Amino acid sequence: MLKSTYRVLLICLLFFTSISYAQVTAIQNIQARKILSLNGKWNYIIDPYENGYYDYRHAPFDQSKTGTGGYFDDRVQKDKTELIEYDFDHSPQMNVPGDWNSQSEKLELYEGNIWLRRKFDAKPEKGKKYFVYFGAVNYEAHVYLNGKKLGIHKGGFTPFQFDVTNKLKVGENTVILKVDNIRKQDEIPTVNTDWWNYGGITRDVYLAEFPDHFINDYKLQLVKGNKNLISFSLKLADVTANQEITLSIPELKLEKKYKTDAEGKITDEFTWNNLNLWSPENPKLYAINIKSDKESIDDKIGFRTIEVKGDSILLNGKSVFLRGISLHDENPLLQGRLRSEGDMRMMLQWAKDLNCNYVRLAHYPHNEEMIRLADEMGLLVWAEVPVYWTISWTNPATYANAKQQLTDLIVRDKNRASVIVWSIGNETPLSAPRLDFMSNLAETARSLDDTRLVAAALEVHMDGNTIVLNDPLGEKIDLVSFNEYAGWYWGGTPADITKYNFNIKYNKPVVITEFGGDALGGFHADENTRWSEEYQELLYKNQIIMLSKIAALRGLTPWILTDFRSPRRQHPIYQNFWNRKGLISETGKKKKAFFVLKDFYDQMQVKYK
Image (cartoon, rainbow, N blue to C red; front, side, top):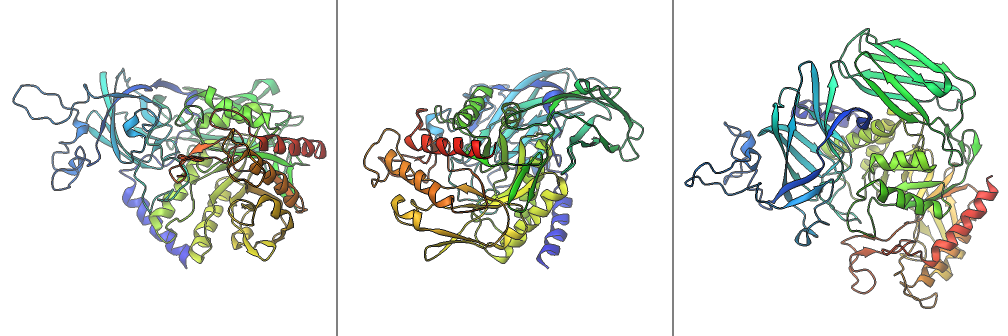
């Protein structure tokens, strides 16, 4: 009953909001299109009372009869009698992409509204289409071009765009955003998280130019369980039949020609023998090209299969152990989100130094560039949406938001060979509404992409010395994937935890998505002293002994690669707004537990050779 109610209300919700919200899913592979970067210095105005959005009766200016009156008008004084109480031209600037918390000391803990403005020149041509594209804005973005509202987007980690074809001017244009990162109960994520709520335009901004009838989306991957059957699908941005499309992979001497059907789509499967399959040991990527008479799109795509059989995970038909680690999208060395390819490559290289073949990109979609680097560097990926902790399970709008963020993640990264798991959430408490909510998300993920595994980071409970996993969501997902913090939050000290055993309901591969404990880098004491590297080191040693009792254990992503910032972590000596569970400190130094895990992974590499 609840499922059908969700669907009816979701249809109504999408109908009433479709005009004001961003295009449903982002354009595939925006970097390969004709783009003008709008990155750089943006002027900003801090607006905690939202004076630039509401009048004194708390009515939105952009919904008034004139549609004017807000900061999005970007007015300047024309004579000395004119009253204007803001001024972008003389306001400070911040770097975009970038979060505001790390760029100004007074904004470090700020959660609220900030206006950002960028001026740019354009030369729009007739017969072309133009979109303003955002890689991510945290959290709610109201977007204006030349004083006119383009729409709204919610979700801090997924891309979106607006059609500005008929709104661009020849010469100077102005794009303005009102960005709101206030935590709210009914949003995704909700009010309670364990990471820093970095606000701002945190990823790239582009003005993108397209021809008429451009290619909006495509997918090129192997069919599930088949090493030589390739599935190719494509969709134009509009319904245009008989558009000629050529798919080519020069290295394979493969070239196939198509014409779009009456819906502007192509769907095909074809056999191609002797593919060099992608794996962490052999991260083979093929240069591919998709061409119409008006555009040519280049990409790099790897081909591999991933599936579950009994209690094994099969990569290209071979059993694999996922030697992993969890990561946040944050640079421990420089406060803020990962800023560049160099930042991201550093984090992934640290994972490889640990002898990882796998990373959990928690707890939200990470930068698209991170996934492409994982493709290149040979790291399998668990990709996740921020359905985290205490979500409003019975609110249809909350479900619609979660479903859209999951859809955006899958659409964006479905061509990346590294991604093997779509995760629908983390540590969500048991209840009937939660089970329905999460089951619907699992169904959505499978409907969008049946070639990858679907999972979630579940929780366990205790029965004496037995750790029990019987979450009914386990029926709906492909992995027995769960978090446990024996030796830190429960179960006594690290010395005590080897006595525990597991009772796992499901005959599926077991992947431990989190375990760990805090250690202040450089603080040394005996192994019974919390916060010391020795305590964390013993915890890892005994966790490995405890977890090795699980016959179906097929992977780990301990929490976490590096220390990261969190307002929840208040201890003035050992935390000071840092979660210290990293195996690498905020100075980039490896803690003692790093080498314990690496030694175990060296053993697993030999075992699963």
